[in-house]
Amino acid sequence: MAGNLKEVRDRIRSVKNTQQITRAMKMVSAAKLRRAQDAITQMRPYADKLDAMLRNILSNLEGGDFETAFGEQRELRKACVVVVTSNRGLCGAFNSNVIKAAISAVEGKYADVRAAGNLSLLFVGKRGYDYFRRRYTDIALLDEYVDLFSDLSFDHVAQLAQMLMTAFEQGEYDVIDVAYGRFKNAGVQFPELETWLPVRQLQAEDSNSRRAWYTFEPDMESLLSYLIPRILQTQFHKFMLDTHASEHGARMTAMDKATENADELLGDLRLSYNKARQEAITKELSEIVGGAAALGG
Image (cartoon, rainbow, N blue to C red; front, side):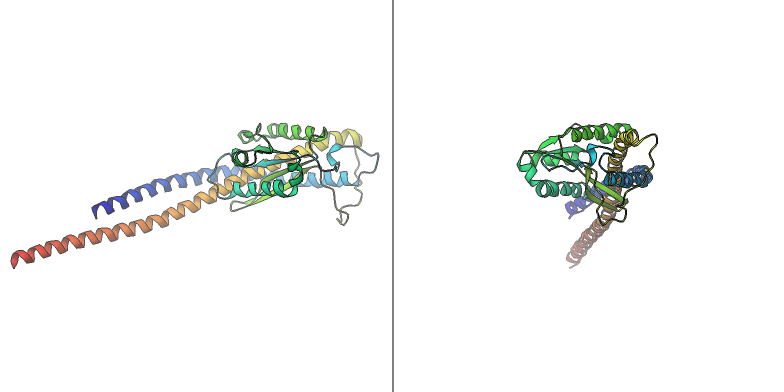
């Protein structure tokens, strides 16, 4: 019985230590989440408006107005999927959901491209890279930007965006998709697979598909030559900020749940400890009473 009591005490001590760690991680993630959430909530309306404007312009250009490779719809022969996950775990199913979105593209949308050996995966974040490098050895895996989250400034992220844009212009890829986590709030994050290049065209039934009568100063060519790359870089930066906020939201939620689970487990362990202790006391009292009765008899 003494051995059982010691075992329960050790488990209680272990759970308390774990709870202290999860509570501290929750507080750290909450502090990081506030900054990350501010960044994406300020960025998203601006990025979405620029994306809508870019799609409207490129969808309604007439022949000879302006030529850009970024809106060119090509025959699908070569593709790249950018997989954006976190560097660390302990954030629930966040990384798994983003990886599943990437797998759906690899094994579905781009199955023929993969079979032809023309599919590439580029990784931002170690979790996605660690998963695919063990299971998908037939795909070109690009890990030069795995540590991009160490610096999420616009200029730093724009370097990767520019590299991909150049590769698309030169015909190295016909399509570039991005699998990332879209942030809604601390408790809800959505895995997304979005086509970044070529720029998505407006549908014919879209009410905004009529010609956009923008006035360009100084002239259309020089202005769009500068604006289109910057808008695409802004969109790519939004993918990174979305995933960054989603990671901290998912981790804060996971650590909060782990802390609650530790409370429940501690309650069960304390109840087990008290029961075992009571049984030990009752047994000792019974032995004492029995011994006294034997002596008196």
